[in-house]
Every structure is written in C-alpha cells, then in structure tokens.
Amino acid sequence: MGKFWDAVNGQLLKVIEWEDEDKNLLVYKFPMENKEIMMDSKLIVRESQVAVFVNNGKIADVFTPGIYKLSADNLPILTVLMSWIYAFNSPFKAEVYFVNTKQFTAQKWGTQNPIMLRDKEFGVVRLRGYGVYSFRANDATKLLKELFGTNSTFTIEDITEQLKSNVVAGLTDLIASSKISAIDLATNYNEFSVLGKTELQEKFKEFGLELCSLVIENLSLPAEVEKVLDERTKLGVFGDQMGKIAMRSSANDLKEESKPKENKSENKTNCIKCGVEIKATVKFCPECGAKQVKTCANCGTEIKASAKFCSECGEKIVAV
Image (cartoon, rainbow, N blue to C red; front, side):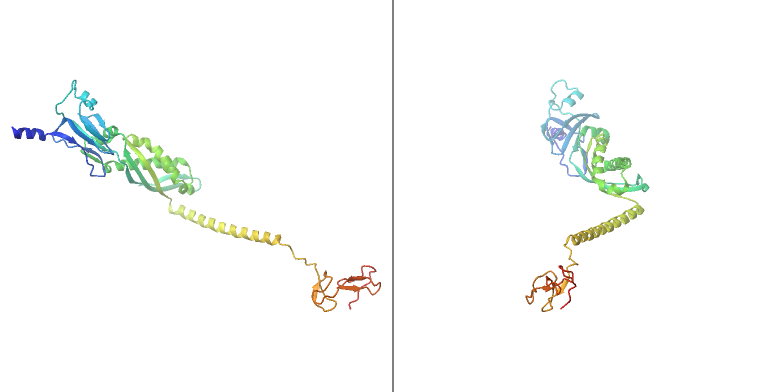
C-alpha cells in the first residue's frame, strides 16, 4: 500500500511555478506528464510573469504575479468549464502556461528590399534602413490564441521575423507617404520613430504584444544621391566661410569710416624764427617760442605767418 500511495502522490502537483531560466522564452508550458493538480496546491507567479490555465483548449483563469492557494474560488472559469457545481476538492487536470511579460530589448530590424521614395528633386530614390525596437507581452490570453498554438515553449525567435516584417512594412508606408525630401530625411529620424511606434502599435496589439520603443538608426541613400549631398555640404561650408569673411571685411570698412578723418587741408609751415615745421594755425612756435605773426610791409597790419596776402590791404606778403 505504501508504494501505491507514493505513486499516487507522485502524480499530484503540489507546487506550480516557472523559474524562467531562459531569458528568450516568451511562453512556457508547465510539464504535467500525466500529473494532476491538487486543490490547495500552491501556484507561484513571479514578477514579469502571468500564469494561464487552459482546459480542453479553452483559456480559463489568468493569474498575475503573486502566490496563490488553488481552490474553486480562485478558479471560477475553470469551475464552470469542468462543471463543478459544488465545492470541488479532488485532483484535476489542466494545462498551465506561463507568459513572460518582461520587455525584450535590442531587437533589430532592417530592410531586405529598398524603400521606394518619390523625391521632387531626385525622382524615385531607393532607401535602405535599420534600427532597433523593443516589445513585451501585455495580453496573455490573446498571445496564446494568436501565436502560441500547442507548442510546449515559444521563444522570441519564433516571432521576431514576423514582428520585424511588420516594422519594416509600417515604416515603409510612413516614409513613402510623408513626402519629405531625401535631403531632409536625416533630420527627421526621431519624428519617424515616434510616428512609427504609434502607427505600429495596433499591429502589435493584434498579437497580444506592446511595442515599447522603436528607433531608426540609419536611412541610407543611393551612392549618387549621397555624392550630391556631400558636394552641397562642401559648398555650404565654403559659402558660409566666404560670408563670414565678407562680413568681417564690411565691419572693418565701417570701422575705418567711423574713425575721424585726418584734415588733409591743415597745412604745415615753418617757424619764422627757427625754421622748425609747425602747424600753420599755432600762434607761438613750440620749439623756440617765437610769435608766429608777420607785419604787412604796406599797411603794417599783423597777419598770420602762413598768410600769403594781407587781410587788411590785400598786399602780397613777401617771404622774409
């Protein structure tokens, strides 16, 4: 009898949990191996997990993170499916799936075929691009219905090709319909990333997933277009430098014009006594102190040393 009860007890599950050792596993089917679940069994659902009970292919009860003591009270849908009219305390069979709800980051996407962009200046341009995105499961029941099927496990590799195709298709439509010129594409990566995340969210939702982030890292243009853009960039830099030189030259010209101009009409003369060159307007020589006046030989009027005619009688002044 002891061996019999040992065998029976060996077929009864007392603890149901998933330790999530595989970081790329999206869905894990708990191995029953012809075992039955005991009422009052312990169900452990860790953070970033959801547990789903399935009966005969029909999704029943869903458990979020926590520790549960299984009973008819916390298995209401399964109770209905199994027709438990009254409290049920016997072992039962059901499939249990754990869904990983953590965020799967650094998922790469890239264009296998070029994105066709109609540009006003360059005509039809073929773009290629790549980037990364991240996602997570946010609707366990929909994920099981739409993707999982009857597999025992389901990794992110089983779905990333489908998701990558959706990302590329969505961005292709977005870029093609944006009518942004090829020249301006590089300055709009962030805008395309934000719009792409919004546009693709509904597609991810169909699989029970959430698109958490989307990044466009590069959109490459054909070589001939890149060459034209490089030449324009060089011309732009050269033109900008020439503009700065012209501005500096104009500024210097204005500065020179603003300086007081030297009075070219201010004549020089020689001191009437020592002969040192002095300004014609001074009254005394700064060298010898002699008064710089002459006397008109005709009328005797004192006049400036630089005067050529007498201001009184008009007689020509004869140099001494």
